[in-house]
Amino acid sequence: MSSRKAKMAEMPVPQLVLDMGFPLMFSLLIQSLYNIVDGIFVSRVSEKALTATSLAFPVQHLMIAVSVGLAVGLNAVMARTSGSGDRKKAGNIATEGMAIALGISFVFAVLGLLFAGVISAGMTDDAETARMTASYMGICVIFSQGIFAEKVAQRTLTAAGLSRWSVYSQLTAAVSNIILDPILIFGLFGLPALGITGAAIATVAGQWLGAVIAVWANYRFNTQIRFSFRDLQFNRDDLRSVLRIGMPTMITQSLGSLMTALINGILMPVSASAVAFFGVYYKLQNFVYMPVNGLGQAVLPITAFTLGAGNKQRLREVWHWGLRYALCFCAAGVLLFELLPGQLLSLFNAGEEMYRIGIPALRIIALTFPFAAYTYISGYYCSGLGNAMVNMTGGMLRQVIVLVPLVWILMKMLGIGSVWYAFWIAEISAFLFCYFRVRREKSKHGI
Image (tube, rainbow, N blue to C red):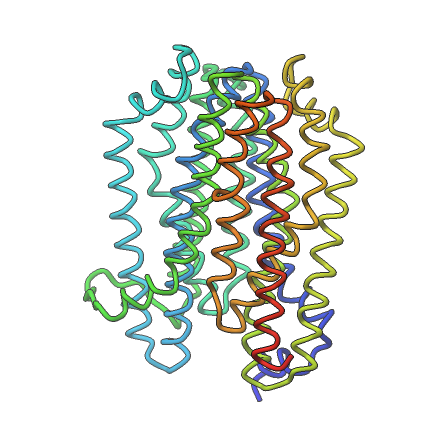
């Protein structure tokens, strides 16, 4: 038995979930941390600048969703092909993936050149906010090749068992962004102060540096899966396999982009400060949810392996420990949001209006975190049991189907102070759906 199989079969479940989940949690926390730091620096420019980044966020998030979904599909197909011993085919799949990723990034770039200004003007009536949004969004979209190349190259490293180099690449992107932000935004070391434009440049520069590290590590250390554009041959069956696996991830990841765009559209006519706050909330919320997401991504392969091994007692343990750890993270998030909402908002240079809206909103929404923990873990657990629709449907219920219409209804009927209660109904609806689906899946497999 290989060392990986031995670990999956024999390591105590509490330790196994953390052992496999920690690298994923760490990388996702890095992502959410530098989003928070980026927001903190931008807020020092002005609240309008912070609002502009919130308005641009759905487009950024959409690019990340597409790149991550493609990379997840590639990771699975590359790992399976490499494991079968066909390294040449695995290398061709990796090269196909990189070519497609760069092609998609150039489509985004063209759309950014043509429509960034039009989209931004449609989001707000304030000319200065629209200008800032167009500047920030345009730079991030036109130079999106970095984020697409970075994700594909990182997943290629992971598929070859070189996950530490994937983490190094993410650290490079995050740290360089954090360092460049104040330099370019405020004009340190004799450079001109570029404001929100500097924040966008710092973001894409970090992505490009992360991509350079990941691509270099592949050429230097990855002997199993090699990029080779000279010998590239597009294979429809391989591409279908990549999309079949990656598309659900793209859709699930895109839900956050759709949700923020729709809620921004509801909030903007009422209060620009509410839009700025919602962008801050989403960054802070991700810092709580990212460890839970990482745990879920670890629970999925452990569940699938254990199901294949037919160990029902161990399957029960995977469910219980994954959920317990997730609830612990979310309980910590609840305490943080309930006890220190003002301090959290002060990190983003909040004005009086944002404090008035944001402090009660953070306390209201925080109470839903434990329900979200259950939804996350149950979705990944059911995916490991062979039913990926639970994950997708749970995400759609909590982020779009229930949440967005309720926000609109409550805004029209009761005003902005009431809209945050929509999160209660949306999260409980998703929780109830997942609760009954988990019971059904467990019963089907005799767990």
